[in-house]
Image (cartoon, rainbow, N blue to C red; front, side):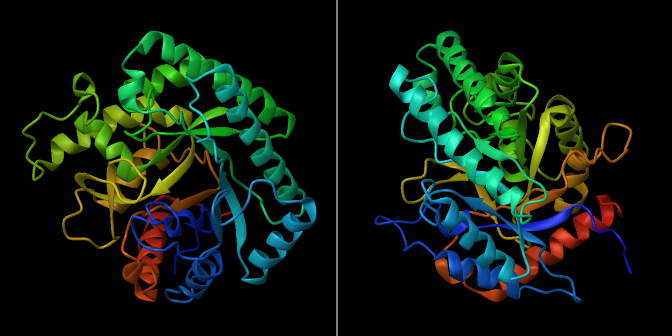
Length: 342
């Protein structure tokens, strides 16, 4: 019997929303996602909590009374709440003065919700997640100027977040300008230069960083990479994680088949695969260790929970209980291999 009880194991609620909508499949309701999460069980182990999207499922403008109801609802399933995704897509972080002010205001509202949930005792760990709300194509029109604007917006957002005792995690994903390669992501984080600014690593998305998908000059793996060359993939992951691990304050366990995909209104990004997909390029349990341990193999303990992320799956897959049991089983293995006891 493995006694590790950290990191706590969370499920994401936004896969019920991301890539859904009028030109795709219907959104899967919050209550359904909660029920599927709470019902998952492997050898007596269950999910510890959920990470929330403050859009579609939950209105970022909810009142304090409604925040209390949200806490009671999630707590009623014996789940905690962790990280929150801020709905910052009303205007790009490198946009007009009004766009950037709106971005910061969305962060403020999200941090208020986070602070209230923490005060209610339902949120023992977690950050507020952001991205640049900008496309790599638009960013490319003026990389230097746009990067400066993104860093400025993120700095202002960090200063607001600090008033609520919150940290912000920038999502490393190839569809966000200024964050679309591991090098541009690192440059953005360094330019922000705030103690409460960090990186949110998703294993599916960061694998695409090694391939230089939206920024060819930053690829680590060769263009004709042979995926059976595990030693070379290990070296690429070591290069990537050495650069970004020190910034990582939020972590998504995920699988990817080395391709991109988009549905609904979502741009093409690293394609999430199911936990046991035979086409997955990652050894999920082994490769999670590159993020959870330093170069010497010592646990970083940089975050108290980890979250599964798998978006843009058909609703038939998402509403199948076995999907979530398989995910939970994989996460239990990650904790057994790279967790600790408190």
